[in-house]
Image (cartoon, rainbow, N blue to C red; front, top):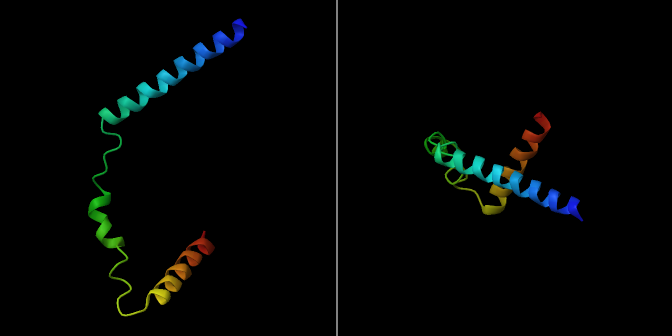
Length: 72
C-alpha cells in the first residue's frame, strides 16, 4: 500500500515538472510564430483552383498529395 502512495507522489511531482516547463515555454515565447503568417499567402489554395469544378479541384489536390507521398 505504501508503494502506491510513493508512486502517486512521484507522478504528481513529474506532472508539476511538466506543467512548469510548459508554463515557462509559453512565457518565454517558444510558441510564438512570426514566420508562418507571412508565408501563408504563398500556400493559400483558394486562388489556385479558379475556373475548375470542385470535384476537379479535389482530384487535383489528391494527385498532389499522392505525388508527395511517392517522393518521400
